[in-house]
Image (cartoon, rainbow, N blue to C red; front, side, top):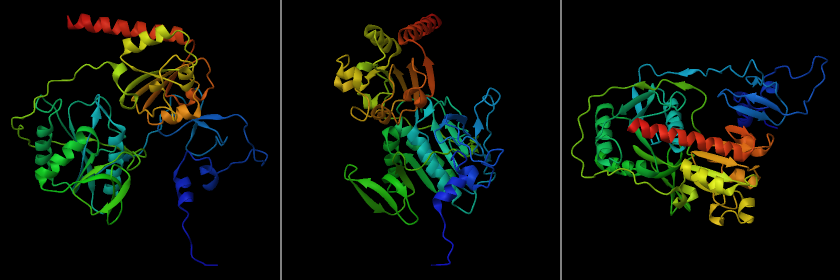
Amino acid sequence: MSDLTRRDPRLEWILRNRLHPRHAELNGQETRGPTGLLRKNPRPQWQYGPSGLRRLDRLNMGGAAGVTQLSSKKRSEQVVLPLHQVLEPQAYIAVWLQTSGGRLTSHCKDVLGQAQQLAVARTEPTAVLGVLCGELKESLEGAGVDRLLQVQGPDYEGYQPEAWGQLCGQVDAQLSPLYWLLPDSGESAELGRRLGVTLGERPATGVWRMEADQLIARNGAGNQDISRPWSRIMLLLEECALPCGEYRYEASPLELTLTAPARSRIADLGQIAVDPAEIPLAEAEFILSAGNGVHDWDQFHQAAALLGASEGASRVAVDDGFMPRSRQVGATGTWVSARVYIAVGISGAVQHLQGIGKCEKVVAINQDADCDMVKRASLTTIGDSRDILAALMALAEAKSTQEVSDAA
């Protein structure tokens, strides 16, 4: 046997993860009852993690360190994460902030997580600079942005790739960031390629892993991986890294002297209204999905039209003939990644939960408070679906009337 001390990466991860059931045990904390006997609670214990989200402890290890037990006193308590500061940065890593409806996309949060990993690995103080055009409707405290350059105005609103490219060129000329990281999707993917032409750099596209001496990128329509050298401009795929979640970040405003962009050759005529029923489920951002618990289908269709949501359904509703097969959500249907997913009368089979795994906000409307969909949801309403949908439609109509009166 060798006398060398070997590292156990999994053990180190458990010691850092306060939510792991064995965290208290491996940190030498008391895990026995007052009589010295090990006790196991047969009932699952609700817990609050450091992010404030309620979690279900299925292993009945509710006494783990760093976990706040569910109680009327603890519900209002917020765990304050440590603040990550870069007081005098000597270098920057620039990230183009991709937004949807004024909020960061999940893809952009993954890119920010990768940027923070690069910044922390450097010996000199390095800050992650977020470059944003337009408004922002959420806080960047936990996103991973150390410095924020936000530019607003008609020259940058809408679809303005030429103005965005000129802005990034000015930022590069004044700050000389070590790297430019952009999500390889949507308008950010186009901007990254334009920026490569502007700066005379060959961008690395489809990057999903960054190693010490090379990049691993997807090629061949995503069917093969290639290795290539590092580049100053890198377009990263989704899930390239874990989002930031262990610290709070300053997101301090950064002021630069910027010149107005040149006259754009592209005219943005605004967004075109699209019927939600014609949007493919895989591309829909707002989905109202029905299951076996829906009995008034006319009301369900009216609610979807009034809310402007795309319609989805569970496999049971499709098999019963209430919805077409193209609207089935789940592993056996369509995998969706909506920003808001409202599940009406869906208990939450394993295949369905797999299909909504990438949805950001899940709202459950159900009569069974113990079903799996309720455990998955961020917000739950317990009651009859007809009454809840009727109340929801009344609120939507009242808001629409108020907006019309304000506009008049």
